[in-house]
Image (cartoon, rainbow, N blue to C red; front, side, top):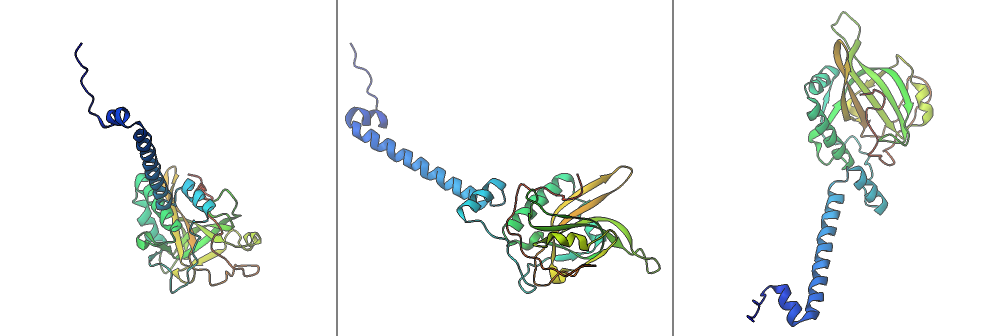
Amino acid sequence: MPRDREDDSLVARILQKKPPLFWWFLLNTTMLCIAILSWVFFLEIFGNPHHARNYVLLEKMGRHQEVTGFDSLTAPSGKAYNPRSLYKKYYNLNPEDMALLNKELKRVYVGNLKDPSYNTYVQGQFRVLNTRVLGENDFIQNGIAIQAQALVQPDAFHPPTPYLVLIEWILPGAPASATQSYQLGDVLELRKNPYYPLVLHSVRVPRPGDEPLISLSCVPLVYDSTITPPRGDAFTITPAERLNLRGSFPIFTKK
């Protein structure tokens, strides 16, 4: 009977000649696979902290980045836009581009704005529409939010009138009672200095038979100055205690 052709494979030779080496080979291969998977896992976690699951894991490990409070000298660079410029900037974005921009805005904010290329600051007058206390289901969970509509003066002979831009002015750390200090019709004056109101999220609000509104969720980056509301006592704001990356925007206006 002809002799079977000898199997020259590495595994076959290990099994035939030195069986103990097989287990050594298997153990080292397994450990190498575990090491590679661990490296890929931690690279994903630490490289993408803006993903909700990753942020929660980093928070449990005590390795998440806490929200930084800047001052006027260290605040990230960025251009300030008035309501007309804001509308033009965001109106021209198609839904896919706006969704991509919002992801980048969240990523940069969670990373404490090390990349200033997306920074947009809001300036202008805004008429208060609504207020509410922030809760555990919001992106920023402590403080209050104020919804307001931009006011634009058509010309030198007419008073400011409502414009097509809404803002959600988020004030982290503000006391819940501060919602009573703002009433319908009060006017907010936002400037780059002293609070650096940064756009954190944008959304188009359709209106049947009319031009859509642009709603912008904004958060301050500088917390040195107290807030003086139209009525009631002044109050302070502080950086967000923690972030809920599963929290959705906009806060007031439904998509």
